Length: 199
Image 1 (tube, helix red, strand yellow):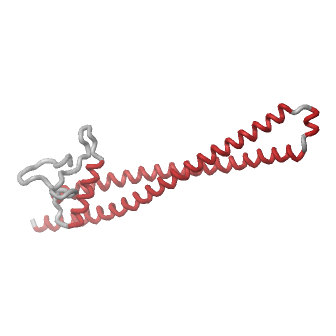
Image 2: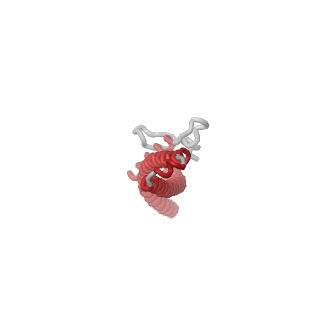
Image 3: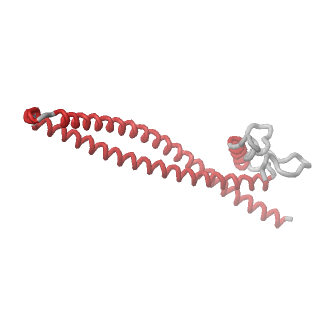
């Protein structure tokens, strides 16, 4: 029994270390993901507004140029100043160049948004792994860890499971909470089976 206790304590220490590492990684990933979402949302909204403005300018300039071409007669064409026509063409060329630049920037932001989505999938995978480790810690300690850091982990995990609990079937329910809010507890003395949907 002493040898088994030593093995169990060693395994529990390893699980605690992995859970702490995952908690640090998850906290950093949450901060990075939130910052990337805010930056991408602001950049995409501003880029869309600028792109719409440039498109409107391009449409207006192109319409004016077409109107000049349709309405000018042979006599009017002779009177049109070469500088005015050249200026109009330069304006259209400038607007087109600006539109190309904005389109390239919009493509860059779209790729950044796709990268953020891929990072979110990786983050979800880490969350699932962390959830699995917490389940193991919960079962290893009977829901009543002795160390304060483990109790904090259980409390964080409890709030997480309550936040993601679904009304239909109550999949993902957190373990039963103790007297203090957010503190996970184990099964009542003399009882067996699963607690709070944890299997």
